[in-house]
Each structure stands twice: as structure tokens, then as C-alpha cells.
Length: 172
Image 1 (tube, rainbow, N blue to C red):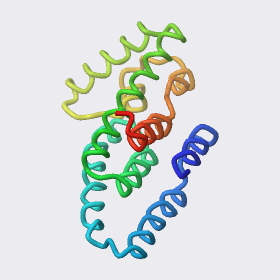
Image 2 (cartoon, rainbow, N blue to C red):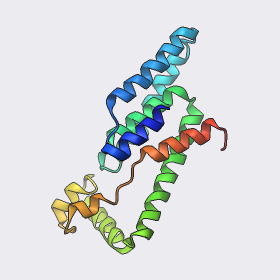
Image 3 (cartoon, helix red, strand yellow):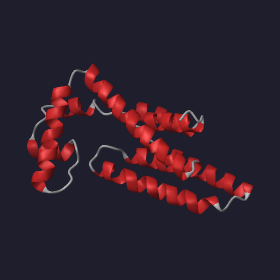
Image 4 (cartoon, one colour):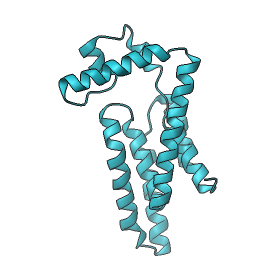
């Protein structure tokens, strides 16, 4: 249910409210305390840390939002380590698939390929990671219209939702 609400907020407002994450983690903690299964708390925090460490580099270049990372971390509370890693893989594969469909549908393969290779060249030239669309746009001035570039983003909460739902349904 929380993931469904997160997808709705992400698609409608381009953000995932922190309050939703707080509700999810607090609800999980209340269930743990109520059932007396306190031994799962350290594992859940380690899983949250693992999700953060895997996701943070992608966030640093601007390819993943902070709300997406927090949503993944919240999901990690409810799943064991193997399941959350599976969900991460499925979410990233689904996200890539959605991105490829958008590239095909909007017929912008060459534009995005040129942008990506220019981005990589600039990262190598400056010897530091840059934000994928903002710093690079300012530095190499490839894009004529930032809003045109922004519309090609995807709402990553949907691949997260699908990955978790499929894992919980034991469909992979």
C-alpha cells in the first residue's frame, strides 16, 4: 500500500514525501516491537545501509532521486537481504527498460547517445563525477532546452513498486 501511494505522489508531484517513508518505517518498527522479533532490527538497518551504499553513487550523478533511495531503504525493512538485492536488480532492469522504451517512442536515440558520450568525455576531462543533466549542460552546453531534457526522466518509484510486488508474490 505504501509503495502504491509513493508511486502516486511521484507521478503526480515528482516527489515522494518524507512522511510516507516515516509512516512505513514506524509501522514496520511497531510490528516488530509488537511481535517481539527484535532480532530483525539490526539486520534491517544493515539492509538499509546496503541499499544506501548501492544507490548513493547513482544519486550523486543525478540519475536517481533522494526519495527513490529512501523508498528503497524503507522497502529493505520489510524484506530479507536476498530479497532486497533481487528487488534492486529488478527495479534497475525495469527502469532501464522503461528508459529504452521512452527513447524508442520519442525517437531520441541519437540525441541521448550523443549527450551520454559527451557527458562521459566531460567526466574524464574533469576527473570528477558530474550531475548527469545539470552540471554537464552548463559545462558543455549541449542541450538547447533543459525542459526538453527533463521530460525524458522516469518515475523510478514504479520499477521499485513492481520489483517489490513481484518478489513478494514470489514470481521470481
